[in-house]
Length: 571
Image (cartoon, rainbow, N blue to C red):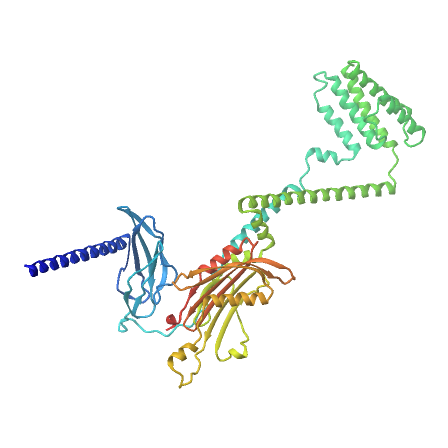
């Protein structure tokens, strides 16, 4: 009985343990299901076999919660296949989850069997990887029995595709031509004279005669408008006298004008007889009575007065002495001075119009694009020129290489290796500018060479002698070197960095005061990158002035293009 009871108790304990184990397994399976259900990543291709140069469509699908941030791979992370195009992400919302589909166009120009490597997709804070896929790239089969064979064509030079600078130049030239035509037409062109201007250029005598003819053609007498008739008539004789005899004839009273004519006669300055002066006085007095005393003489008398004025203008002309040579010369000088005055007036108007156009253009572009940007475009800003350079260069530097896109090709710099490191390290360095200039780029690769080992040394000790590369120490060495060059007030921050093709490294960034060529110091931003792999140290350095409005975009564009070619890729 006791043994049976003990057996029963043991069986119950075993069943309890099995039940507990089943519960634990269920919980683990549930957690695994929840994890896989929260984010699922799948990859696929539309064909496993293509011909050389044919496009292959690669697709990554991600199903995840709406709260997760998704980062798909970018850049040439599909090597050995080449990325042709990265399409926009398609997003759908199904059952409280997002389904995101990212498509890529890939190709390969060499035949063979290739494997598309697993791609890393960031889902929230987790890194998930797709499956690797195998692709067969077949050569194009040519039937030589049907396709004729031809000699290899000679190498032809390909003209570099030009930018649209010529279009902008054409528009500017067209605008300048339009402005020039308008200025010529309205300001500089010798315009045909109007009738009034032609009359103004006539000599005073001919002008007075023409005015009398126009008075005859008027309708003043027909409408018995005696007052206007006498105003015009006396205005003709007064204006002629004003130009040829007495320059205040227009504003003088009748008494003042007659007194002046008599005085000039007595002074033998004009050869007027008393009858001429008397006739002029009578007509002027009669006109005064008409204008101010409302007198209304007979129309026939008005016509007689007109003839008298005509005759007395002739007498005045005959009484005037011939102009001397000095007077003619003075008149010529006056005409030349008048022409120069007109020329200066035209120049002033042209300068004013061009100035207004330039100021208006500057203000218009300034309000639209910013006055600083317009000023830098006109004057020229070195960093702006680099940022807007039409032909950025994507190059590989060092071995193994670092590829990045820059506005100018980096120049190789020969580094002197210390005596104690010769035979132990190889350095290749490329840069643009210097730390004393407004913008600086440096790319370097250091390869630590394997050293000959003592055969009696144990393998473990040999491994200890191999150099260990530490990214933090490598970046701190750069900072130490800068301090030796006079860089002060260095502020540093570090964080991990991943290139578009998935290479991981360390990023150090911050601000510092860098010495400049003029002896001053300039507050600048810097960014350093360090990538380590076995015995390889690859570094990138970017320095730009802190107050440079274009350096941020320029630096960001270069950083986004950095990709690492690891020794495994070279193989």
